[in-house]
Length: 274
Image (cartoon, rainbow, N blue to C red; front, side):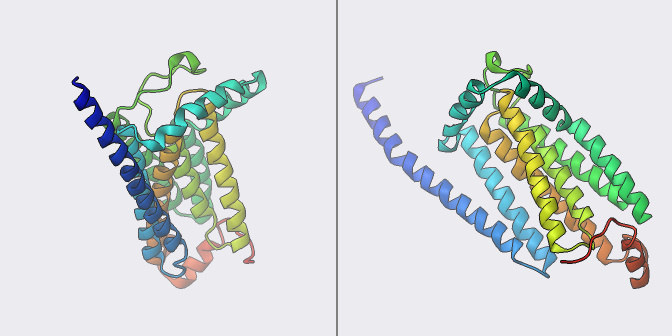
């Protein structure tokens, strides 16, 4: 290429890259504000869900665009992979394999379905297991489809401890785990107090983080893959929870009357409100 052409390209990159970064940061800020606003909408369940889902999907879209364009958000991918590879130990190898197996879409859906079956038995309704399985299946199907759309390559195979050759973005493990853990928590907290909700939320965050970290440790995903997967899965969990609450509000969750709903809730695991 002509030297003037190279110089022009360098100038364009120098100008547009910071601008693109600023735009992406602004969009992420908007996404965060939407999620925060949704969480503050107590008593306005549908508005809260709409704001949260909108914010989560905007953030996911930003990650997808950045990954497709090899943008600045991917700058931490290689250093993160290198850090995990450099800190591998035999006992962590075993732990990561176990965690990643439990967090696989198939196993996660099976475990969640078992919990859903128990909750359905307690509630005398098929709705819990239907909502859990539908949420997990929809999230996994979306993740698989988006892998084909984005077409991102996995990390180098020489650093993978579990050889995986399909596309990388978003992480199916992070997506399914976030969706299934999230919707399970949403069902478990029906009729519970805030303290129990906070406890379950902390446990859910820990489980999702462990699964995501296992994928990074094993060298089969980039950092942006698991973050995007968690965003997508959480959005599906919010959607599933909203459907569940809508049906419960219409007295189809347990029965057709206030008394039936109150009686039915007693069959769900409960704790005293704090």
